[in-house]
Length: 238
Image (cartoon, rainbow, N blue to C red; front, side, top):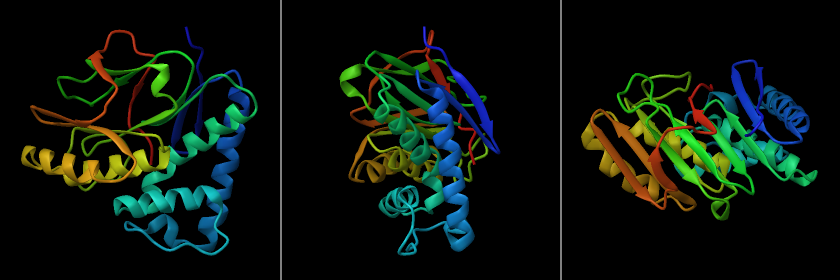
């Protein structure tokens, strides 16, 4: 049974499973301060809805976000939660932690030596809480990020019930989930969106839920009935 540390930092809700959870929390707070200081120098980094060029001395977390945003054609803040989740988890691994799972309001990065089951939450949709991704250790580390045009605090220009992206990079998975949710306004958008997102280098798999349609593409982890997940993605960030 995993023990979870839960904390809130401004608008972000985070859950951590790691023997070095205190270090993860401290790193999240540090990264937040680094990004806020950078945004003070380049306000467009926060406001942009499309990729932008960074200042020459941009911090590594901002560079990771901007690179993911450029790959997906979205603004860099679309990658913030996934990027922070990965960077904070990697800090724990570097300090010797055997497990580091960081879920940042619907965007997560997972490193573990044991199986992890991620429940998928889709608001008021009938399948909400009924599906999960079962991820075996040989697939880890891995990022699973979700976005929605129906619920949560994420800015979305679509009307997608749920878009869940799997990738090795937390920033890329987060940005791609935003792109997918932006693109889906009707059920007819699901198939071309699957093709568009899967064409982005680094994307492992994608699941889209829109009305009565569930579309999947790529090499998703095993999709199972959600019975007792380790945690459920809620898309509560931004």
